[in-house]
Image (tube, rainbow over all chains, first blue to last red; front, side):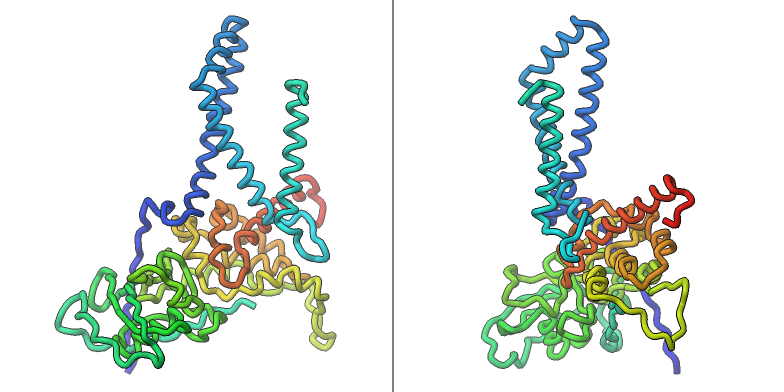
Length: 134
Length: 282
């Protein structure tokens, strides 16, 4: 005689604190959070343009605020998160091999090195254009 | 090649006891494995839908030797302490992909994790995260199987040649292009480790994506158009936020996170070609 099976699948609910259980989950969440700081910097740049539009006095006031200790700290924090985003992004991009060596993807360190080298060169070009250094 | 995990039937359920859960504490483990002198305490997630609506934990203290893995401990408990404990297993050698479970919150093949390497006491063993639980450590694999089927996981030919003309041949270099993704054993550890899948069960997920890339990279395949269309959707590869934990927990080093990024690159290239070269063959 055939028996009937009645399944009662139990669906577990994930804790809102799932990202604290694994350091790699935490790093992922921090990487996602970096976008907030990048957006914040975009707003600061818009603020700078708005001040520039207001004339020399307006821009001087902006620069005074810009070089104040709190703003330097804020910019330092934004820079740290931007660097974290850049480094983790370069690490992520190694998952897509740009080329192959003897049919195999290149070593991860080589790919990251190429990206970082391009990044540094472009940064130096921008620095040269903006500030005339190095 | 990827094959479906071979579920082993759960143990026969004994007649319901007169008492409700939690069940009575287990009897002492006897006899011990030959040559064992140490003991380990395991805290196992149980779910017995015929008796209770909620899962619970049950602790077992068992003797063990250094050469015993977590699956050996589960077998010891089932053989000698509590025959109602239900879990899947088959090959005991990391091939069948059946025996996955969360051990101390991390998805593992229980046949490949030695008891001597576990530090905490008790050691918590739970069903794989992100899946519905059917009984004890057994989870519902149906949604996973449907995802595998959705990526056209077979060689598609537009110009099928007659069998008498022989097989479609490949060079070792062509084989190497997809060999890594073909090593998947469908153990589902990557799904248990994926926070995106934990958030949305509609997400195609790591293993199915790696399987799609396996056929994408196969020189014999001509079904790229349909396959990419199947995976490059809002619940497909584009939902992946690249946590990367799937590749960390993969016991066969398939690197599903990398597979998804490669699929994204292929899908984006295909889209750009269709926009810039509308008359091309892509």
